[in-house]
Image 1 (cartoon, helix red, strand yellow):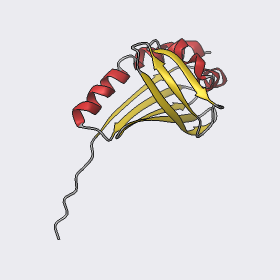
Image 2: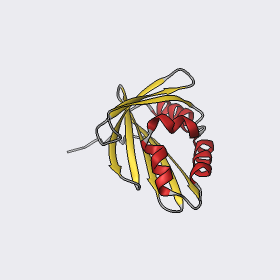
Image 3: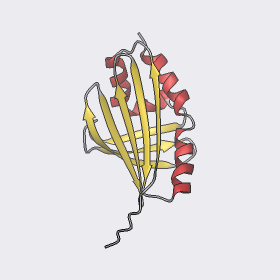
Image 4: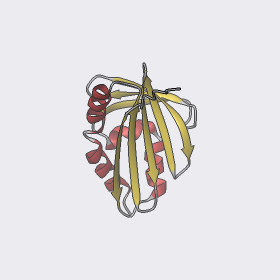
Length: 141
């Protein structure tokens, strides 16, 4: 029996910033989604339907005119949370991990053609280092 396994590729990006982080202040910025635009210049507005809780969904409106529906997949209060957006066959997962000295954001895109995922990934992550530097400056002790 011959098995042909097609390995699905994905786009993966991770960025970390380090400093002396006020975790409570950072969690307030994360959990109040209307404040995401304060540290991410690409974001026009974010609306969450319901509380900042697993299963809640919302829409992130970008300054370039695109809207990205998302759902909160998991939350470990003051430690990490993940969200995902489903655009047809493509899934974009966003991870946010906090320690007292680091903030790590990840972006994983799967389900599309390699070139498509790479292009989307480059667009989504282009400003992420700047956004994370701004976020760090807002929550440093």
